[in-house]
Image (cartoon, rainbow, N blue to C red; front, side, top):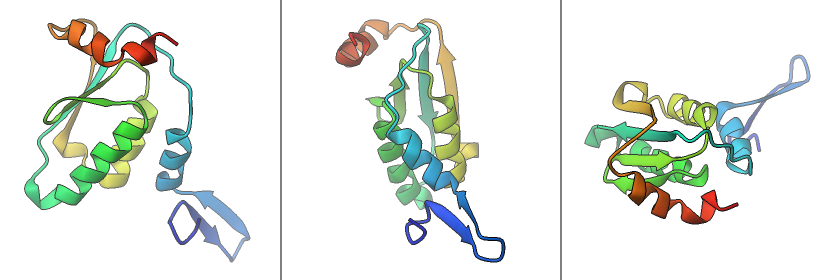
Length: 121
């Protein structure tokens, strides 16, 4: 786990710290899906120089339940702000990403179809 940078071991004081990457991995495996009727949306304009980070972002948010709506617009009906913030911080992409919590949208029917299976649980 240390090799994969999920934990950081401090040998001086015999302590182990969970890194942001480790926290993300832990949260990715969480089945907690609470909804309050609002949509969480992520939109970004990430420069091509950060293509690898953009790909990591897509992979990570997909693992926590986000789905692609358009090229750089992803949505989720579940409260995942902590996970999203950790992912964005770990990738250092804060200035390129907008996080929105939306009450209503003109694509709501499309979003409900997209998350039909998850919302029936």
